[in-house]
Length: 253
Image 1 (cartoon, rainbow, N blue to C red):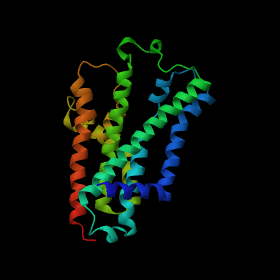
Image 2: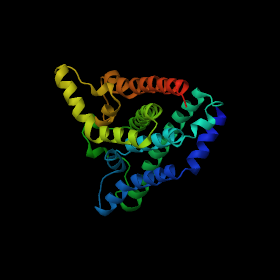
Image 3: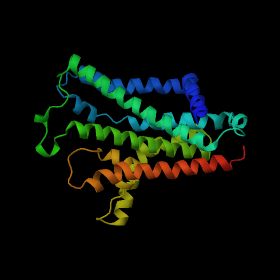
Image 4: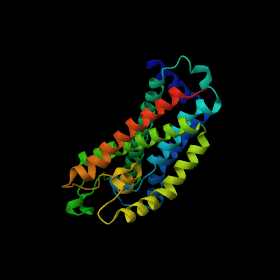
């Protein structure tokens, strides 16, 4: 396992395509702070972070480039015979999670620096929110951790599609079109067909983020947070991780 982690780490450091991803991550982290400075915003840090939503595309781009490069370039033929297929997939999951974590920390860091140097200098202003929306530090941390877990699961789905289709540009087109154009429309159609008492969003990876994650202290903790924020992404990771391993194991390279 350690050998595979080292191999992927070297690839991440040396790949020009993945270097572009790090540049994109930096730019995404800077967007909200720069916009707040330009607009002379008086919002607190928490409000600025709520307006951000770039972790999903970051996860998609990073996971596709990391997972598909060996396949699309044909390099997989050189390492396939002596590579542990399970370690190969698990290593991808580890680095997808690490990428999302690094992005989250960078997003928070730049928002704090920008706000305290050029803005209101307040992390959370409770007076801006109604009583039901008060957001203690624990919920702030939980919101980010669940978003990281959710985006990791999205990355594992991308890894599965890469194992299946082998071409990174095809997977990128499918996932980005679905993210920006297809997901909300598809959810609306399913909800209409199923009836007024059913909502598909809690059982999807994009639905939890679209609904704002953990936005308040809820009495219905399981259905509004634990199910969509923990159980669903973990199930996606296990199922699509397994099928990624299975495809790789059975693939004729």
